[in-house]
Amino acid sequence: MTGASSGIGAALARAYAADGATLGLLGRRREALQALADDLPGEHLVLVADVADANSLQQAAVEFNDRFGLPDIVIANAGVSSGTLSEERSDLLAFERIVQINLLGMAATFQPFIRDMRRARHGQLVGISSVAGVRGLPGAGAYSASKAAASRYLESLRVELRGSGVKVMEIRPGYIRTPMTDGNPYRMPFILDADEAARRFLRAIDSGCARATIPWQMAIVARALACVPCWLYDRLAIRAGRKPRGLLK
Image 1: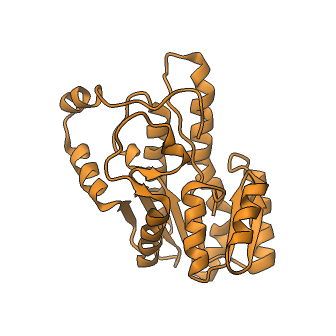
Image 2: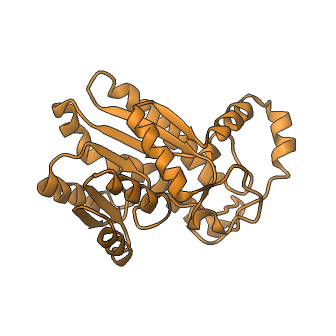
């Protein structure tokens, strides 16, 4: 599981460990990962890597496979967000980092495992996208674009692997109370605590469905937004609150 050191990743780790799973906890902060691993029941492996570095992910995959064998589930959870404006040249670095982690990092997370999962005809690849990818949010072009692209990537991968025994699932969260949302200066409807969200994620992953939007109320919102014509969406969205620029979380 990538992005395991905090937020949804840490909450998912607690939920899976309580269910008896053996985990590979991957992130950039060794101390936070080790503290989490020490607090969990069972045996787990701390893997320090940046999902923007495909080589480090390859090494982490080898380390996990050598220790525990091929995983049953790989969860690409790592993600960052920031307010961005295309008119600001300085924001181009934030655009690049957000797309690198949220989209390319997901593909790099899955890649080391797919061939072996195909051979075993077993395994599940779970990608965390977002309801924010359903329509473009003003002031969050990089985040919305990265999550929309992640959704299409997961759909493509699901079709590619159909009949192989390897399942691909997309989870589209709404608002979850994590460090990523702590600085949002606007109302966040239907927001869930991370531990409650993790329990719902786990149930959805166990169900084997192709896509789950959590909480369920945001699935209704997402379907409604997808049907709103552009002229009306523009009028509504222009009033939306905007995430602060300059800090990736």
